[in-house]
Length: 260
Image (cartoon, rainbow, N blue to C red; front, top):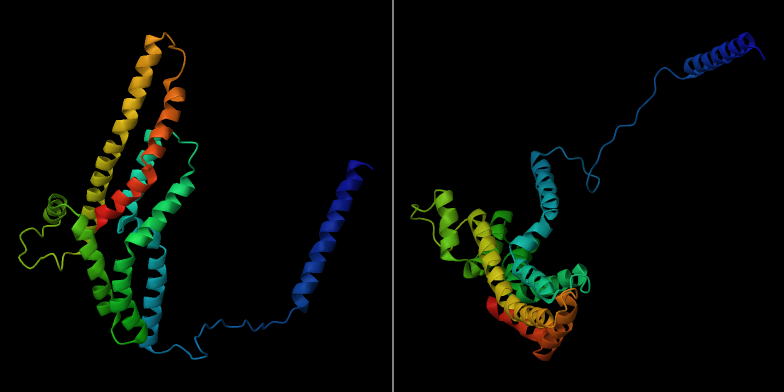
């Protein structure tokens, strides 16, 4: 087939396709009723401003639920426990042997155990009355934040709290007490205090295992075995020491008692 015939065939197909589209457009009705979308709750139209405000509050609450993991990490005992377990993993030198999922799961369930009294107070003083409609949303938030604020302030150093009070310009406000310190000041103070405590515990964890590394490295160097990695020899001794002193029991007990 020559090029001229191919061009004529393409032009004919385009013409037929254009005619078909024109016919469909002419056959379509002029007035098409587009259905209107109306979202209602319980079949009632939402024309009242009060209902709109309630729906906006519900949307805000659902949005805040997406920040729940951050609240669990930053406002509970999870930070200290997770950092200490990470230090333990590095001190033992078993980065590949203990999966991170196991340590995170252990930290999460220890957090639930330690924070259970606080959760109980929040449930009894805020959630239940709010669900029963006996208190307003503002009062429920205020009553629910009191046990959490009290827990965080017990673990927060005065120096760290004073830092954020001065940064927020509240250090000279006589109305600010331990009972009404804003959470925006308490939370960062609590977090840096928890990090400092976790680093102190991690330092104490490193000392016995570091001594084992030094002894093994000195023995290998005195024997002229400089090509043999000391980690391969010290790891079994570290695990033996940790098992003999019942390390998991002592570590978990110490962390639980540190919050009591």
